Image (cartoon, rainbow, N blue to C red; front, side, top):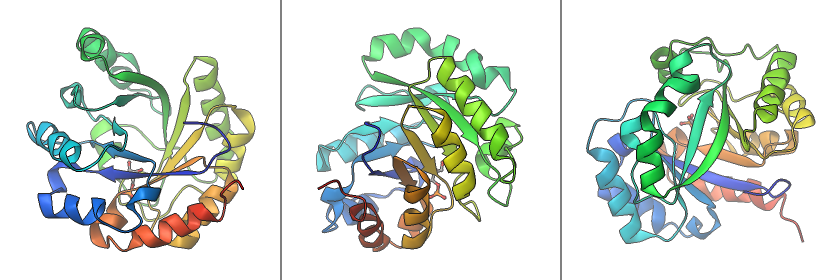
Length: 238
Ligand code: 1GP
């Protein structure tokens, strides 16, 4: 991932991805404009991750990046993993504990490791990730806290910052908050959670997001991919 180039990632929840849904995605006429496939989630039942990655590999050469909710989602069929530290929270397990447990498994996997400062933002409802992690998201009207958190993550060596309102959030991260974060860090900024319209994606890109992630909306309406790639195209470097 490179800063200053707009990219889109589709989040695939292995528990909700039947073969025909994967077909709908990869055979969509605009699928070639998708940059990454993020695979995983806060609550994935054992087994479905492996099957989902295998089915995706049969269908596409796009980079498959694990977005792990737990160490049992590490799978060497993928290309890389967002090694998330939930730096907006104070749950030591999600800051370092799980990482220690999975360090050797991760080393053996050969996956490219993308050290990511993961920051939860309040998206207007309690999401699975905030419930499961037992952490309080940063309020939308506190961009200064988000910016300081991202800066600290960057100083700790995180190569990516992920601002997430959580899957199915009512609202995406505000432009003010995204801009405040982008202003503090040199690393690419990933923004996801609650992006449901082309305007949402454009707003988020304009505010400074390098990568926009969409999950739910594409599960509900695969045609939204057309709108998403139009939003990305507005920022294409000529
Ligand atoms: C959630 O950022 C992702 O972790 C995507 O969220 O499902 O709301 O698009 P949505």
